[in-house]
Image 1 (cartoon, rainbow, N blue to C red):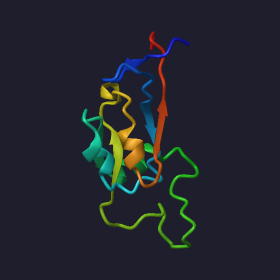
Image 2 (cartoon, one colour):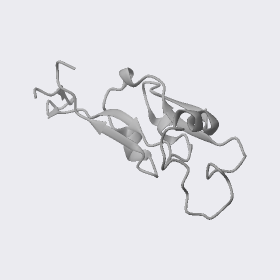
Image 3 (cartoon, one colour):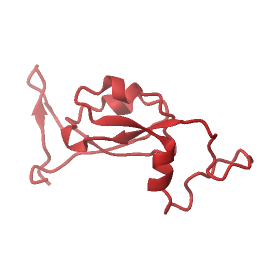
Length: 113
């Protein structure tokens, strides 16, 4: 694989790792990644929207807290991060470094991708 590479200001070669996925089950919706991203890659959505998207995932909503909630979350309008425009990611990794829950998956991409 011939990976996409870039140059630092000092002339060093680096390989960017682009955001591929957000583990929304672990995301607490703190918005830190949203604030640090220079490219508007993310968007906060209501967790209810995520419940609909994740309905096919058997493990989604299991929280080990022993409450009687069907989905494992309170009835408050909790927010969770989503990928708004992953194609705008520049692979800086700021989102992963700031995330307190390690929700991000990154991957280096080939030049042909």
